[in-house]
Length: 580
Image (cartoon, rainbow, N blue to C red):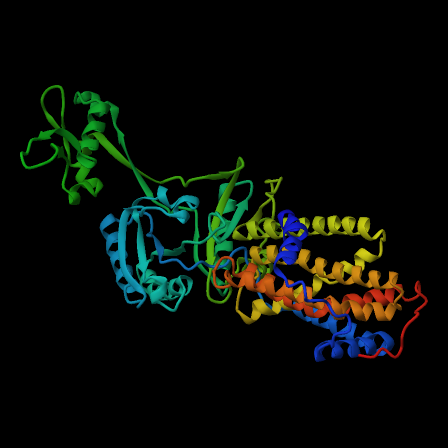
């Protein structure tokens, strides 16, 4: 903007003198076009007939309220960032704890076969027991840390964007519907993880449960998970809680062991070698690139049961062979579950995604909040829900809505505060220029008019109102204010030249419309290049539709408001018979 001012004051006048023909002269009395004459006629009626004027302003107010109400009726939905159009996504599989690697691999292959039935899928690759090569999601959601026989990943690759009509998000939803029945049959929990443009969160929907005891948090988390599962549009429900798993301990009868001359260390090394294996040497093979380790351990069928391990025999000091069954006893217990902390507070996570019915997490959360309010983990109080901060008191059970919703809330809150600061700065700047505390309000009254075009345009194009849309609205406010300044400044110029107030007001809109229209056209043309980009579409819609709407409304509304505010100060020295 600073550089463009230099161009406007230096380069443009110099180029005009050099390039334009000197014989061309501006003719004050040139004939106006039909549209300008119509504008003068309509503005004359609006200024001189109070009923017509108030009717017009009422229509403008109704249009503004109707546009904003599209948010309330969910015809336009708010989301942090829209879905991108990538050529890949990932299916994350979690089998019940204790599932063997072979069974996990079979389930992954079955789900991959179902995914291949989608026409846009060109190939898949399965990973069992280890995470797939991680992308952005794998980095921020810690998928790269996944290890174990009960986990698997499926990498799904799609046709190039130019060879398919559907976006990757729509394909991912269809693939989820295809594989969900197979996953339910094998008791597998799946998550269709798209490569999103952001934000970097654990999952789209995250409920953080806080409370004084682990058992209470698990009970509350189980209830909240049930609410997630029965809420329409909420999919891929999971929680950060392991299934109950049995742990077997071999306890040595030290009296019997000492009588047979067997130590605890001998028994431990025997069991470890039989189950996990023990390397006893290297096999040198000429055709192999590296030496092959020789590992000794029991066959899988024998080492998979306690009876097989307890049938092992260990040698005593006297040379006798004693079975472990006679020296040990088995104690069975449940493995303790992991305890997660966030900012030093113990927490239990319930996660999910949104697809189908609702595509924005905020609306799903609003639907679930009343059900969470009905939960009473302890007599006397209900679960307190937090949005932007953690609870300070964990002596009572509470929960915080996190994930994409938290980032969305913070971004739109901060953008709103920034916009308020912008309005204050614009007001101060205009006060200094016009030396009036009222004129800036007249100039800034046109800022909300851009919403009349922005919000319906998002609805017509089925686009989310995103953070980039909000940025476009804020950026467009500067252009709207510029147009209003052009009108008001021209009105005051005409007043200084001796024109009547109504003549000056009408003349401003008629004469200064061309630079305003050219500005709007430049904004529309410049924004059109990003209209079809998935991420920046909201920015383009806000700039294009907002500029068009504000141009159409501010050309009439700003002069009318200026006339209404200043007519008593100027004594309404009007020209009733304004001729076109």
